[in-house]
Image (tube, rainbow, N blue to C red):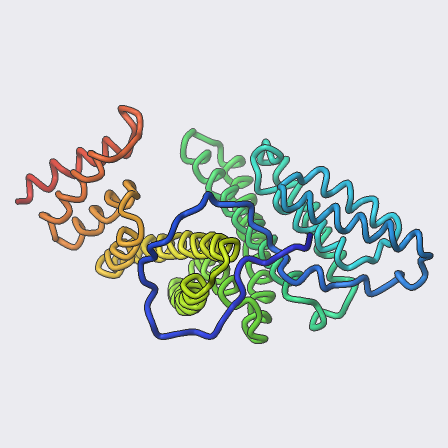
Amino acid sequence: MSFRVPGGDTAAASARPRKRRLPTPPIMQRSLFSCLALLASACGVFGLNDDERASLDQHKANASLYWSANRLPQALDQVRQGLEIDPSDYRLNTVKGYCLLRQAKDPRYATTPARKQAMLEDAQAAFDATLALRSFQEHGPQVLLGDALLHEEFARFMLDEKHLAEAEAARREITSQERALFQVRLQECDTEARTHLARSQRDLDVLIERGDMLRLAYKHMLSVKSLGDDYVGAVEAGQKYLEHAAAEQDAKQKVYESTMKVSTEEKVAQELSELVDDELTVRSQLANLHFDRGKYDMAIFELDRILQFDPSRSADYYNRARALYEAGRLDEAYRDVQKFLATHNLPAGHPSLVRAHDMLRQIEARR
């Protein structure tokens, strides 16, 4: 009945992650609050009578259950009722911020860009309200991580808006006055994005300095540095993430191999599966960063690791083929394009298929 942060952090290990031979259960709803059940309201609770305390505790428990089931409107309703009893309850304010952030990232709720922006603003207000309850250094890791995630997502949204405005300006003829307005809009988006990135990095820096939730902190620092076009910083964060992910996977693997309880085995297998999924996501980000910087051998290395973990990832054969082609390894690139074309499930005429056939022709012309 408590919120959980996926995966505790362990010390970095030099061992590289190895391919796991485990049953892969379906991915379950992740929870982001591992220690939140330990948090108590810092203000106001001692002024409540027994009935109010009991009702407040019930709303917290219900909010936790609804969050775990991804029933966000119901979770927020429980939060609202709890905050009517104690507006300064630290846990409920934190849950509110996470729920609103998850809604802002879900197209079922954020149905338009304007709606998404409004929901991100609501989530920011919720996290700001939580942060106001304590001095900054006294906040728990869940709150700092949530605030970091919120500002990372807000920065990504503003950069997307900037790119859309640039594309619109390039698509049609515009007057000099319209162009000036576009430039103002682009500058506003860029400034807002950088402000959000700075705040996200501030939160993550504190987590890293404390040694709290290091794997998640480095994972999101990679994203923040990437959005800020800091290649060196992003790669450094990515490598730090991989060190902590390897140590965490090794620790869980030992538990999996030694446990005699079926329930523990299933739980650890799920956690390992999620850790592997996270690692593949990070390696994909690193591969894209290296490719964009023309570091094709480094991109190939990451894609090799991805396909060792999961040879069924058809799109990554195409991605590796692109890097191999640019590195001049034409025979290997040709094999990867053929593998992609034999395993994809894209509709006929998809742009990726057109590009793949173009690459085959280019390879044959260069042989």
